[in-house]
Amino acid sequence: MRLFQSMHKLGFRHREGTYALLLPLLMKQSQLDLVRDFLEDMRKNQIIVDGISSNALMGILQHGQTDLACQYYKLLLSMNIDLNSRVSRNVMELSLKEGMYDVSKLALDRLMKSGFMADLRMYTLILSCFSRCEGEENEALIMSMLATTGHAAHKFLCGLLSSPEQRKDSALNFVRLYYQDLENHVDEKLARWFTCVLLNYLVLMGQIKRARCVWKVSYEKKLFPNRILFDQELVWSLDVRALSIGAALTAVVHTLHRFRKRMIQYHSLPRRIKIVTGGTLSDPIQDLLRPLDSPFENHGGALRCRGSYVAHWFSKPLVEKFLENELPSRDEIIMQKINLLFPRPKPEPYMLIMNSATAA
Image 1 (cartoon, rainbow, N blue to C red):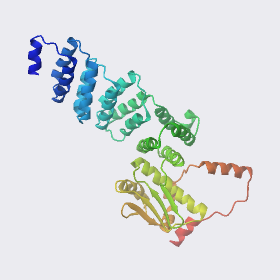
Image 2 (tube, rainbow, N blue to C red):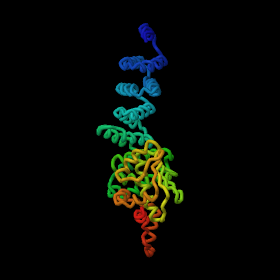
Image 3 (cartoon, rainbow, N blue to C red):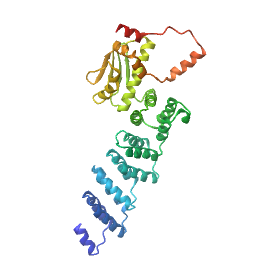
Image 4 (cartoon, rainbow, N blue to C red):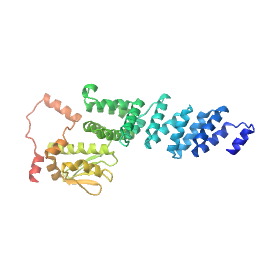
């Protein structure tokens, strides 16, 4: 800088390459005032600052200096420097991960004003921050960002949280219609991530019934294949590893209800039922089931229990109430319509669960 300034005093006119070389070096020294003066000097010498500033800021981001990059981002915007969309998107995503939501909102507004079209990946990233943020102010800021994206996923989320009268459809059909469109336009990996984040949000907001709709449809679409396995009469299992906490809790409630239903409808009782949790999800699932006097015990990353004990547990009114409101599948809806058209004598109800309770 001393050499640069001495040459400048002697009337030497620096070229764009010299400024492009020095600006990143100055930025790394956290000299905001010096950087401001340097940029003003560039403008006086008719050097276009937009591209050079974008590249310099991108270098700061790539070195993992998110806090410093956010400070410079606000400085550059205050000087009306037109940063490119790539820089704004990177600032937004990295500041979200660091919990700097005010900068994230600033970057997102900048992106949208430039005509940027938000994608599902961006929307999901913003939504994922809701479960991590603290305070109503940050929650409101994140919800504002979700609305700012203008993405179809936000319209879906608002519709899902509205009443059946407002959306003019049941929650289950509403979710099926959206996931049909999702299936046609988004790859499975992104759809799985969106589903896990959405279930986190719904569970956090206490929307368990709506969460079960989402899990049921995502399972129908085979977004989570081989999660539920029936090994004849030996083992029935649910694998929730690699799911979000919200997705795992929803899957456990929904699948236990499915196991109970299978016991009654198919007159079957497995020797053992297990829920494969891995290391991180075991505690949240046990916390969910513990108030119900759960018979499951943790053995090496899985909650296990004998089938007869689970059948006895299923017979308890509190557990039955916990697992109720099972959503009908498409096949069950069709069969119900057939039975209405062609009624037949009802067979005696199978009381497997109650018999198992008596035997226990």
